[in-house]
Image (cartoon, rainbow, N blue to C red; front, side, top):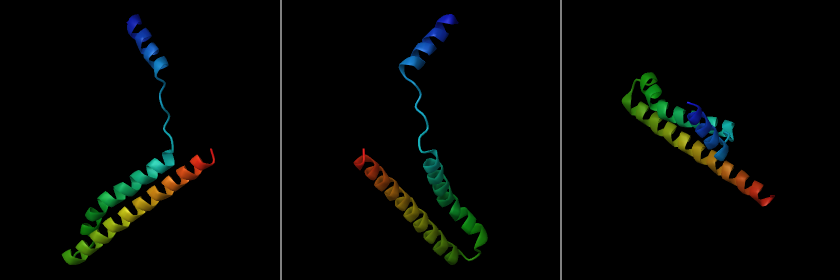
Length: 86
């Protein structure tokens, strides 16, 4: 048992754990993707007509994809500006 503890301690010293960076960005992206995935289910429950539901599902998917790409572009731009000033 003592050998296992020493071995684990040695491994932890060799490779320290990496912290979770930019947690708010990761959570925001996760919520956006979750909303995009669940929106068809919600729309199908709320909109009774199939043709209108299909239209709303298309709009929701395009909107979430556009927001996702916009957030990603803003993140890349911010990173490039930070790299420029380093």
